[in-house]
Amino acid sequence: MLKKLLAIFVISLIVMPITNYADVSTDKKILYIDSYHPEYEWSQGVLNGIRQTLAMQAPHVVLDTFYMDTKRNSDEAFIQKMAVQVRDKIATFKPDVVIACDDNAMKYVVMPYYKDADLPFVFCGVNWDASIYELPYRNVTGMVEIALIGQIIQHIRQYATGDRIGYLAENSPVARKNVEYEEKLFNIHYEHAYFVNNIEELKEKFIQLQTEVDMMIIDNVSGIKGLDLNKADFSHFVVENTKIPSGSDLTWNADYCLIALGKVAEEQGEWTTETALKILAGAKPSDIPIVQNKRGKLYINLKLGNKLRIPFNPALLKTAEIIH
Image 1: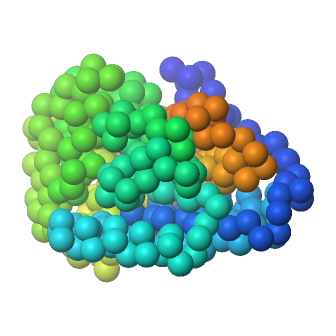
Image 2: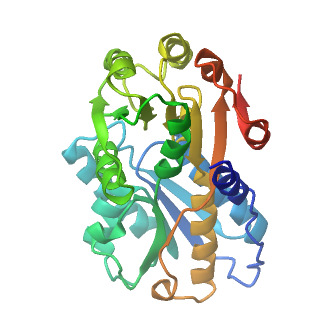
């Protein structure tokens, strides 16, 4: 098990080879469409990957961004309005390639308006299965986002007293989709799965799971009302009330769980930008296979480890980022 986790962590250290795209025309433009908002941690990581890749490989290419803000505003009418604004942005900015991040950009913009169009798109952050958006299209390729939940559960099971697994996340379509695919693809059965709307419900269900199951997965809770202003308080609450091992595939949950083996948002920004530059250099999207994310970053929360009296393997601690 330790060897598997070390191998996953080593993957995160692989550096993408740098290609020079100086021959790409200086008037080329890329538009980045994000389903969420600029302050969202995942969105920041993806954009960092995009900007760093452009800076290294094609600093002359013009980049512009558009945020749909559909995590904080999930009303259908609002999302449809933002999709129209994206179309207007594309019409005025006239990008040569569009990078579309997360499911709502694909569902509300790419699929209804640009399926098999002339304008090329590269997506990332589409969870688990791109075929639900009728892909492939001749003008679209991308990176499907999958979680490392199977490996996380294998690890935290070592510190659990039984096999019952709980799940805790914000109340969102993505979280419910994650449960469905994790159970289907990894043969995981969640004894209890709770989807909460505010920090009071989050604390209530966190405590409830401590006696209902033997270990728990904490998925995305960053959109929960009240948590953004109370992260330190919730971190303290978790330490005080933890009785079972917990895990997450989100690096920003590392303060709230024993083990985080997180997807690397920068990987998706780097890959989509590299792919967009290939398209600008003449490649066809239809000739570039759709891929899955591979890199992971390991965090170990020693505050929770000490609370649970877990003697971590020193070799594992050397590879991880430690939360004290």
